Image (cartoon, rainbow, N blue to C red):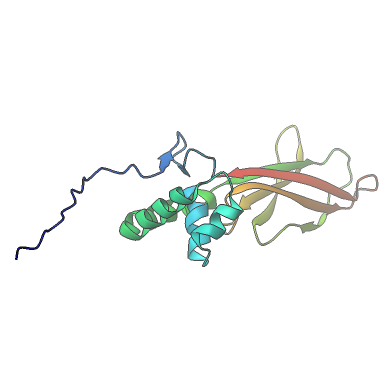
Amino acid sequence: MAQEVTTMALTTATEVIPFQVDSNGVARVGGTRVTLDTVIAAFSDGATAEEIVQQYPTLSLADIYYVIGYYLQHLSEIEAYLRQRKAQRETVTGSVKLLQLSQNKLVLHRIEVNEKYLNATTSRFRDENSRGINIDISLKPEAPVGALSEVVTLHTNLKRRPRIDVPVWANIH
């Protein structure tokens, strides 16, 4: 007695990975503003695909699974991309100049800064028209991807402005 064998035809299709690289070289997932860095960081921290979707509701569960699968299959490429992105964040700096407008020497007693995400260094400057203190503010690699809003507080010897708050905004890709 012959057994009937049922066969199923499988078609293969090329899947498009649901992230695109924008004009700044940043990979964004599923047509959203959520970066590949963010999804991989959450996954690496132990979040499940379902937890990532709860955290970033603009993403679809399918996109998260595709991204995680692509990451696991292309580990060295994605890790190289993440290292490159980290290096880019390390080089972001901004400067503030405190001008000395009076004859009295401007003194910067202390700088308060969120040391988890920012570095601040100072140096004096003097040119033919002005003098004062340069304050260079740079992002640390630990700064999170996305919007960053911090305040750097400068404590000076100025009677009218002993405390100066300098807002720092960054959109980290």
